[in-house]
Image (cartoon, rainbow, N blue to C red):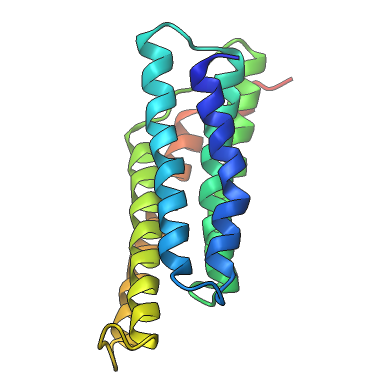
Length: 194
């Protein structure tokens, strides 16, 4: 197994640790710990593709596992946010619908020997998701510090909640737009599926 694939596997392995750190509120600084694990996982996402392309280490496993690892990481974060009452279930339903739809099209295309690359909207969706997740965790950590008496943010919880909600719904809108464009641009694969 080459280095890019090991980095992809590391990202998947980090997900339970990330989720545990985020959800176990009795651990001091749990938002910070989760944020650091998420950052390491995100860095592996950036590195695996660059290394694979630069050193001609692209594999079929990597083509399949890399986007899957990304989806596992992001959807795990959103699921944790539901558990933490930061977002509602409608949000993750939109994200899951988009991801399953796009993945289905990619599988149909692959059966026909075609590779469907991510477009600008898909990349914007991914960036918005990562940024939103990071900011929500930073905001959670600020509130955690405030609760410990380390940071004086009394009364800021409402403002932070609005910031989180706006960021996450911007992400939801970009997710839906990217999914609609992706389906429209690749509908031929669905129409011609055997």
